[in-house]
Structure formats: structure tokens, C-alpha cells
Amino acid sequence: MKTIKYAVAAIALTTLSFGAMAAQSISAADAQNMNKIGVVSADNATTLDGLEAQLAAKAEQAGAKAYSITSANTHGKMSGTAVIYN
Picture 1 (tube, rainbow, N blue to C red):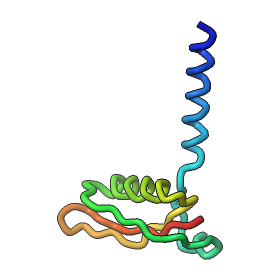
Picture 2: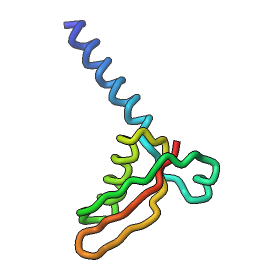
Picture 3: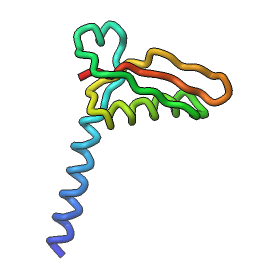
Picture 4: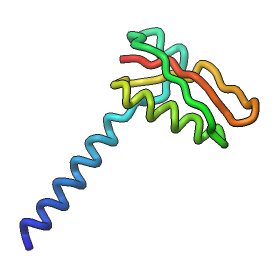
């Protein structure tokens, strides 16, 4: 029984540590002091929050520490781009 408790605790701590490493949205001014490593794009979002979540997820998948949204379009489904930084 103790083994199961320790396993659950370890999984919970691992999940929390991965969440702490998620890419953070930054302003253009903050981006001046960071290294640009690329651009990500997302489409077919139904809300601005959904679009930002997609861009944040793609930034994280690319290994970015931060991202700055550079465009958002609302022609039909929403789409946008973000510059990613390390």
C-alpha cells in the first residue's frame, strides 16, 4: 500500500514540475532580451483563449521558454502566429 502512495506522489510531483516549465507569454518589450528560436502558428480556434492555448502548446512542444503573439486573424475560424524564444 505504501508503494502505491509513493508512486502516486511521485507522479503528482512530476506533473507539477512539467507544468512549471511551460512556455510563458511575454510582451514585445520583454522579448527584446531573449533569443528568438522560431515561429509557431495555429488555426481553427473558436475563441481567443483557445488560440492562445494552441500557440502556447506549440511553443512548449518546440522547447521554447517564452512566446510572444504577433498576429491573430478572425476570418472564419481564428488563426495566429507567435515568435518563440529561449
